[in-house]
View 1 (tube, rainbow, N blue to C red):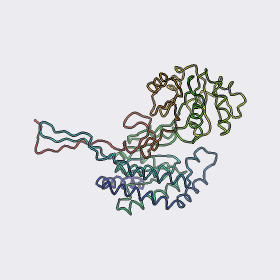
View 2: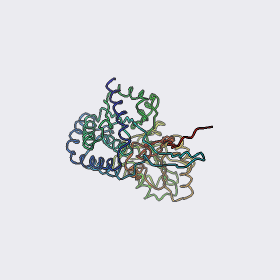
View 3: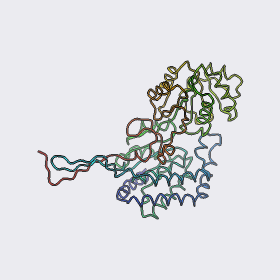
View 4: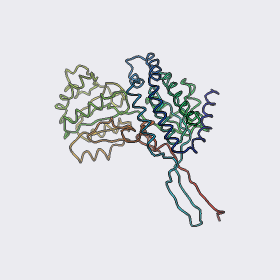
Amino acid sequence: MKTVEGLIIKTYEAAVSLRGLKDALLKKTLRSLADELEKSTEKILAANRKDLARVDSANPRTDRLMLNKERIQHIADSIRNISKLTNPSGQVLTSRILPNGLAMEKIAVPLGVVGVIYESRPNVTFDIAALCLRSQNACVLKGSSEAEHTNKAALALIRKVLKQNGINPNCVTLLPSDRETVQVLFTATKYVDVLIPRGSDSLIQYVRKNSLVAVIETGAGVCHVYVEKEADLNQAVSIVVNAKVSRPSVCNAMDTLLVDEAVANNFLKKLQPLFAKHEVRIFADAKAQRLLKGYPHLQKATPEDFGREFLSLQCAIKVVKDIDMALAHIRRYSTKHSESIISRNKKHCERFLQEVDAAAVYTNASTRFTDGEQFGLGAEIGISTQKLHARGPFALEKLVTEKWVIRGNGQIRN
């Protein structure tokens, strides 16, 4: 316990040194990190193979855990993209001179020390480190034991690059992966400014209920796609398949498909062979079950299947009477992550955009676009589903708070 607290304190102390660094050095360091990552691909993959060997290949988390040359190249490219973005820290938000001569500025400043608890994904280690460094924040990372070897290899690489560039390596700290670490992190209110959980809904709720450190939720994604009766059905099939199968283990994948009863028969006939090709297991309501009779991977839906984040090649399907019923269903089951309507009816599309309460709301597009990089933000720490401070991809621009700076020449208040 004392060791964990000591690591956190070292990071807190190192955070001060980041605030005075030149922007050119921060950019150079991130470019160096991307270069070093590419050179160390085999070393990172070797560590990743050790982690993969301990996980059941049938577990949906395996895809999140796995790295390959393509994914490492993608991480390196993402780090370079982050280096090109404007540092949000130091930006002057408001500037004015009061009648008494006080010169006031409101300035964006780093949060300080960002704590992140996350599951499985070792790419998150690089993403968070890069985003925090670019915004002059220090970070303490608590990854899962599943990715322990990969995370340790990533941290060693990050700290090596920091040291080479004259930056205190304690600015990025990986805490032990055991559960006791979490309890220390929860009570580190003096040293950690914000705590961000990234992972399953159970992890997020556990952190939210137990942490004394302020929490920004990156919520689980129970994402809906609604095929309205005036949808282009070929387009709808393409979007639904992409939303479900392109990468089913991520939070922006579709979990529930809502289909207007007026087009349900025709649409599901078009969808069946493509879902069957990918062996998508369907949990269908009574109407959808009748229309999908003969589909090889069909199950009757239970109430729990609606509102369930599958994170695998599974989804729920419900036939709805109209847009009113679709909106009511989404209101009941949505986790406020990403929702989409497929329709050529502009009035219904605009109504959907206005009424659906979610971080990202789409018309005629896949929910899979809810991602910091896709939104031009470089990367993200997670997708925030709450409404305070940040919503949607929690990226570079939100890793700051505000500070009032007042310059006087002897003024006193009467």
